[in-house]
Amino acid sequence: MGAGAASAGLGIFGAVRAQTPAPNDAPRPTVFTNVRVFDGTADALRDGLTVVVDGDRITAVQEASVPHPENARVIEGRGGTLMPGLIDAHWHASLAAVPQAIAMTSDPAYLHIIAAQEAERTVLRGFTTVRDCAGPSFALKRAIDEGQITGPRIYPSGAMISQTSGHGDYRSINDLPRFPNKSPAPVELMGGGSIADGVDEVLRRVREQLMQGATQIKLAAGGGVASAYDPLEVIQYTEEELRAAVQAAEDYGTYVMVHAYTPEAIQRSIRAGVRCIEHGHLADDETAQIIAETGTLWCIQPFFDDEDAIPFSDPVSRAKQIRVSEGTARAYELARKHGIDIAFGTDVLFDPSLAERQGKLLGKLGNFFSNFDVLKQATSGNGRYMAACGTRDPYPAPLGVIAAGAWADILLVDADPVADLGVLADPERNLRVIMKNGALIKDNA
Image (spheres, rainbow, N blue to C red):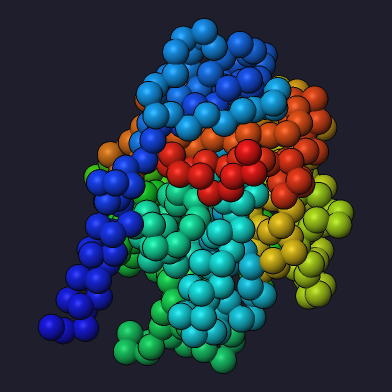
């Protein structure tokens, strides 16, 4: 048997072992009792309910007086808050916990080992689903789905597609010029980014990501902070190139998201049919109105110039970072003004200590929205963003809600996150139970 076939065969057998329990070990239903339920959508906690899980789904949210299923395992909530698992709509599963220099040059096998460890830590922070917005996460997703390792559901984008000198071009000047017969840069070989110039190359790179299992496509449409050769004001990709990516994604039933900060980059992307703007911190009122009128998705990250900011030693990147952080509050205010249903994402990169603060970053939204609205963004709201990939959705059932038929991704919190979002910043202490896909990842019941 060839190496590729052997690998595929092992993956199949691994999936069977992980997903098919022995007859005597058949899982029992789980019933959560004596809990206050935040269902992901309502502006109130509900008392007097039990939540029943059977297999990988929630099967009932019912009055406490209704009899439990036979053989059920009962988890006594002790008055804690039962809520959906959190969703991070802008995460980098393979890049969050490694320094940038290592991420761009290391053996991919090493990066995957680090990513697997970080995936377990991610779900233990209560984030049971992530949308991966660039990086080599296809193998990681497969291993998690097969039960080989523990981690969140992953909606992968694959490599971020970038023009030459764009936000995803991490080559050095010594790598230029690029010729057709020249080997790709290390970041391209490991699947972190993919350089494409012109319609034909853009189409090829988009289709390559879709072939590998991308649920949505990520392009860089404007300048970035961490990239060395593109000022923030640079508009990247022509409308024709962007439109080609959009068409290729739509032919697969899904959409394109773009990295963009400025009004010009955002507006060009929307004219080309892009469905989701990532960042947008420098948007103006006119641009926010266009986002609202077109129903474009907008995922804003809580970038502030504080102790939770990604550290940049390069003075050029640092200056760009400060400028972006100065626009953060304005972006949230514009979204609120125009009634835009924004997504919550963290975009943590290159630092495991920052990744640990995933829940803390969510709490910062409480400065702009009610606590209920913040929690809805990170649960049912982000669940709608995940479902935007349409027929490419690998998990076609409701996410981010406590409702019959939804995925059984559940947190039991020994506190009230509605009263204090800060409890989610300390998951080790405050998350008593973490359930993902009906399986107990953490059980301190």
